[in-house]
Image (cartoon, rainbow, N blue to C red; front, side):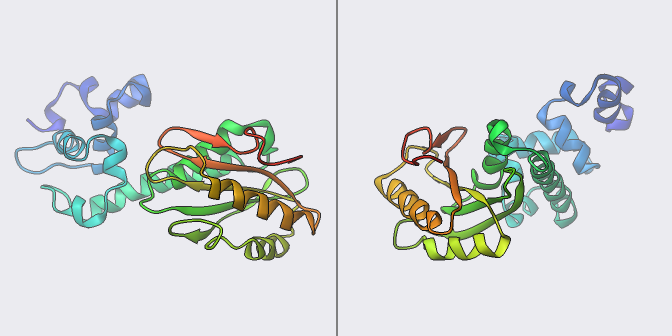
Length: 227
């Protein structure tokens, strides 16, 4: 039976329109983006197969193109639909933290940083450049790989601060292990960057470490003084 033959209020699109997006399961939401199934399988069936294969919706949306396209009923077009959905989420969270003092809404900042950094397979060091009202000027990923005092260069951070004419910054990086506990290296590079910024009268407000569903603020840990 195809989705068109289902009772109207059991079809994902109609269910969403009548009861809201929150009423749909992960498979039903994904099926809306997949749009069509294949002979013998509806879009919902394919979505269930994907979630079973990759563990959850997050695993599906962060899987690479080759793995997705090997699944029955999928290909570059459906992969592009899913990537578009993911990018919509990124842009929504980005716009959510624009035009507001980020220090008044740390949850939105954490959500934004998590969305960008949580599922990356290597460490990424990123910077949120802020104006004098703590509104976001730019989000920029600056360093990649195993991060430490040798691979994160404070002078490059200062260079970009001056380029964006930022008054303050928040730095962040992810731990691909999923454990957000800071290392001594994390603390050391934080202190070095803060000292470099003090020379140009720019504030380091925080260093956020992103784990798997958890965050650590080095400002809250007392590593950043007077941020």
